[in-house]
Length: 270
Image 1: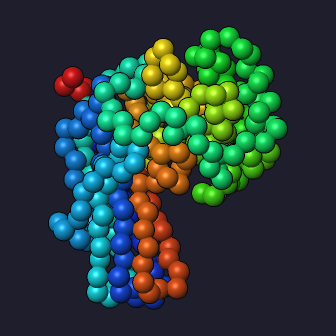
Image 2: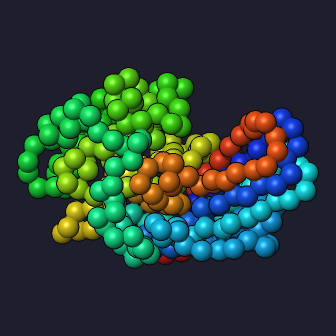
Image 3: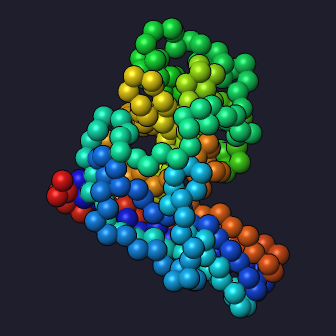
């Protein structure tokens, strides 16, 4: 599938800021099932950016904007070809050892409810358990926009019983780790099944199974990622996988407006 993407992040400051620095993880990787046809990042200072791979293998650009400014606009745009690999991730640049993804973070720390959710998946083969866990998370957390926020933890989302894709992924990751299975958060994009243009980026989880490798699971949609998914970046949780992170000097507060357009453009050339 050929997918076109436009991801715009607009920061508006209540007072002029004089210096800002941002780490941009806005470059999708090429690997089995995903190839980049074209990709461009537009941002102040991008022509002087330092480019590197972070500890999770994501391509990152470090950009700075100096001089007084009350608005900052960052755009990533391009075309990606995808194919269905049944959720199995192969050919990705892996930097961190698999054991790193057993690490608990504040957003993915489990409680007794999450441990029970994991234990109730049975004790058969790990792939079967992970599929049952995906559906169990979807059953336990209804998809409802506006009930959670960017800092909601897995424990809070499960207790509330409502949330969005980030919450589903965090609960899944937390539960999978209690089973001894490394798990990580994936940030990206998805073309809607009904053909409608997507208006937000998407998040899902991956778990590591010794006999297969990394496998993607999207509890919000009850499926493993297909050719409708474009992978952007990964981390231990949504915070460490965030497409943009940074700081600034000046301006008391900021307002962030994120707009994402994702649409199928036609058959891929793979």
